[in-house]
Length: 209
Image (tube, rainbow, N blue to C red; front, top):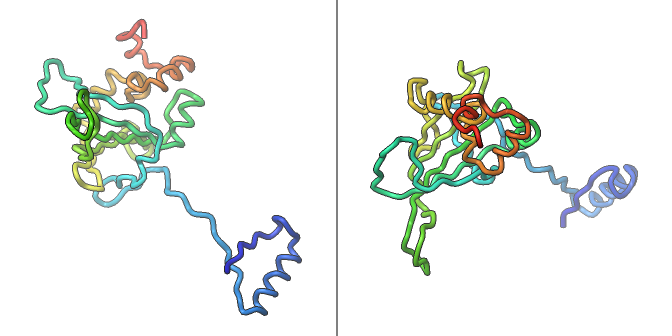
């Protein structure tokens, strides 16, 4: 039998000591249960790149896209969903200010789109297979442009993409807030509007939105 002894909660410190003494005399030892430690919310780097957070699916879910492409006329030979998650601390700060704090982390998870399965007769649902994983990270002291992109493939450690990769220029030119595509996150775009943090380039491209 184990007892959780918390000094000052429910009985005075003297009672706690007497209880511990009584347990000792009975041949039992009081067990102190420590609070579980939470995983760090900041990015974790290794010698090879960026560690994929094991619990990213417990982060804040922002949105899903279906067969999205930023290239005009692009033809795809498959269907897919992309799911976007952001670490909770960054989400709370954005909700409060309309701005992304340092150490913000986005995870883009691309999954197969399935049309046949179980009782489904139309439309698509997300398959179990992950096609791609990417992360967009804000680390002002580490990256000259404050933000960086990492590609994971099927690995748990992501490779830093060079600034010559087209994703950097695309996000800088079209992002609604601080190089991030808030325009595709329906719960966040109104927050950015209310705080006046939409980028000038986005407002010029979307005068009504």
